[in-house]
Image (cartoon, rainbow, N blue to C red; front, side, top):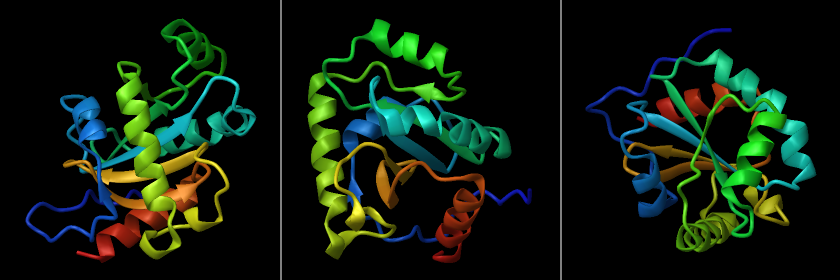
Length: 168
C-alpha cells in the first residue's frame, strides 16, 4: 500500500468540526503523529468485535509517526478489567484510552452528538443511529477534522488522509 505523507507543519489545517479538550488531554504525550484516529467502542458491541481485524490492518499499514490509533470505550459501566479482557480476546493492536473518566465519556457523547448533525459533518455520520462504532480523525490539538460511522478500512483511511492533506 502507498504510504501517505504526514500532514506537514506550517500549513493551514482543515477546518475543525469541533474541539475536544478531553481527547486532547487523554492523548497527550502518547504520540507525536499529526493525525489521531479515535474509535468509540464498548465491550458488548457486536459491530466493534467484527471490526477489530480491519482496524488492526489499518494499524499495520501506517507508521506510528503518521497515524496514531486510539480506542475510546464510551460505556461508563465497562470496568478496566472488562476492557483489558476484551482487548486481549480480540487481539487489539492499538492504544486504548483506558484512563478515561465518566466525565470524559459524557464529553465524548456530547462531541459525537455535535458531529452527528448533518449540517456540521464531514464524513457519513448523518446516517448514524448510534455513537458506537464511530471513528473521529483529530489533529494534535484535539480538533475533529473528519468523522464517520463505523471503523474505516485501509483504503478508506488512505482516502481520508489524502483528503485531509489536500485541504492544506
